[in-house]
Image: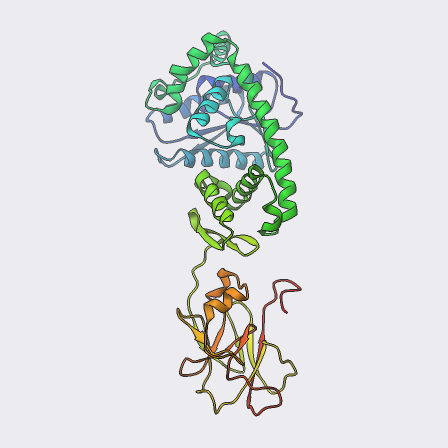
Length: 433
């Protein structure tokens, strides 16, 4: 067995009691490492209680620290078990102040994983299977048995009289992995007894390629992403890098739930971008991706409620902007309007847009749809629904703050008795014109 280059820090060892994990436990014990045995009862099989007792007694006899966890039964949710397992390992790593977590994945497991993902479909990183050493934040996951086959592990435990338990479900072909194990691996091993080393070589080559591409993606993200993607820089990237950038951004957003994002979600976003128009796509778990002119935005969808509120001396709006009734103002831009109370029906209100809203714009004949004004002014679609509109008591639009003045606006040297001033919440220094 290959010796790990770990100093005096403890190692959290995932141990089910099967031959693989008992082999790993014994090897690390014999080599003098300080180990903590992490055992998980998945509550799926009735034998799991006896297996826990077996591993606990084995650890007690050798003076190995034993840490058990019993999970609730959710037999159809494999991801649930994996997430719980690894969260438990990390929790123990924190408890014993060590970054090292060892699992008993071996060479045959790697072959099975690569083949399953090739058949099912995955991404470049997924096709690598798993790495012998994998760093995740402060944790270091190690797989010391990756260089060995199942038969070599069984020979070891037999020669060293290491007891273990047998999970009979490993013999059943109703599990996908078992079908690969029973039907495909024997053929591959017959063609090449050392095929596991070839798959490890393939995995490491692909992993190196994936890491190189990740560096390019990180450079792209640093250049064009600040919470939203700048499309003028994104669209000049190679299509493969575009895809990888989207995958990484969504992976960071979804974190442990990244399995909810499928390849067709990425393709859908890319196809919509090619059309060159604004769009909005709803992804799983309420994540919304939208193109708003030159930006691609990602946010948690929060349903907005329409509002209509009385306009007072100081009216605070939902987006932290405000409209004030002031006594004097030098400004003559679209951020200020002057009206006469004799020409409108008081009191005034501020509300969100209704379908079909129109206004008569100052110095223009006829009326124009508010929707078209938003498009002309390139107001982002996500902001159009809550954009403030000032109306009178008859619901006639008298002002579109910051964008357009209505026919009711009076020049500064005219006769008026109401001055309204709009203060827009600034998202960056050059937003307000």
